[in-house]
Image (cartoon, rainbow, N blue to C red; front, side, top):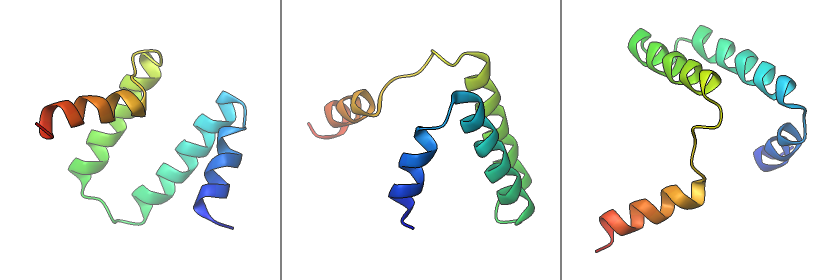
Amino acid sequence: MSSDTVLKEARALPFAEQVELCRSLWNEIIHSHELTPGEAELIDRRLQEHLDRPNDVISLGEVKTRLDAKYRK
């Protein structure tokens, strides 16, 4: 199964199940020792910030627009 298929199916899950899936995946990543403690702490902090303010986001399209405006002058 491709990662695109998995991602599409994950997006179809209810929000609470998406969060649980992310937590489960994140816990596996942490335990794989691929990240430094500082990296793991940074990502955990950013995840918590998002969970505290889930509507404080911008779309990927907006990110691309802003990056294009800033770097493709």
